[in-house]
Image 1 (tube, rainbow, N blue to C red):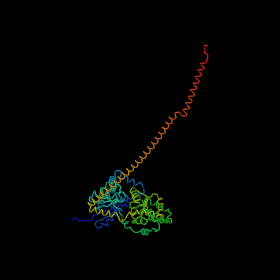
Image 2: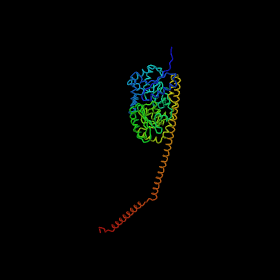
Image 3: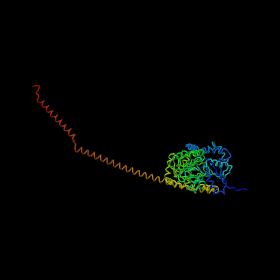
Image 4: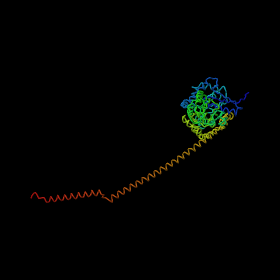
Length: 504
């Protein structure tokens, strides 16, 4: 007798920064809230809690890699570039079948212990291992992944049953990696419970964290490891003479927290310095402050804008974070991008004296509505994959076809408009050239006419006055000379005639 069991959903957590964990937690929360009675939902710190020592060690390696990204600016660029040397998907498989072969095989066996029906991942390594598990052990398993970054780099395995993205650029990049049609779905940003349920006022959270109500307040952070510029920026802000509250969020960097704790007694009277370690409710601290100064970690930036607090990005550790800066600062207008600590201090001083400058940014932040919560959308889609896969695929393909048609129509309209604009520009240029040619021809004709008139006048003057003063002078001299010669000849002839003959 076959006994029915609930579909087993495995939510995997991996620490490489906190963004991968909190987005997975948001999806887990939504699944439990909406389908907890219909699904068996298992949450696992997949590498850390494994009995195989290879996997916890590998997670520590990944944590160290993230810290190196923050510490060495070019490190992330080199790694992302190296992904594409032999083709991104080729290098993904080659590296994990050679360099990380033991770790990949260990993760595959770890999946086999759970025997899941659906695997939910938010990190590329867990996704690759899950796809390999499906290929080796369970062809019916459904592997889905949410990419918490704002772009999709080359090591997201394109064999996944579904990859969820959070913006059109990431969706396009996924299809550039040859994900199959219908296997990429765009969703609004997943919002974890720590954010979605934090709906108290700014004053409430200021009282909670001991932040003065009457001062402009900034919170400074650099991800969970605080390895980038938090120290430099804070030391620069401590020089200011304006009234200011500085909240330093040191995360898991205990040495940094101790260093700033020692500075509290020596701070200037106009400054309130508060320090915090790792906070699960860090988004509430963002919501208590007027400005969040941070590196461009996708999760921290998203938490801040969801809490309605403008951002100031001071550092980008990799191409992933540069994309975050471009999306949230340049396209969504959620804050500022300033690298120099001195310029950051000056900007903060300006905002202290003119806080109304933040109003325009706060208007832009209204787009990030916590009630939309993309995690619920992803949870619904996972349920549809489980129980209505064929109809879901038809629906997605129809949506994609409609989107492609709309995109191609819009693209064609843009090309037509561009061609018409070019024709109009060419016509305008042609008209200008015609005017210039006509003006030049008229000018040349006028010059020719003037020359002809002058030449005719000269000829006329030469005909009308054949003897110019000079010619007349020459002629008179010639006549005088001829007359003198004639007289001389006559005198010579007469002298010859009158001379006596020799015979006489």
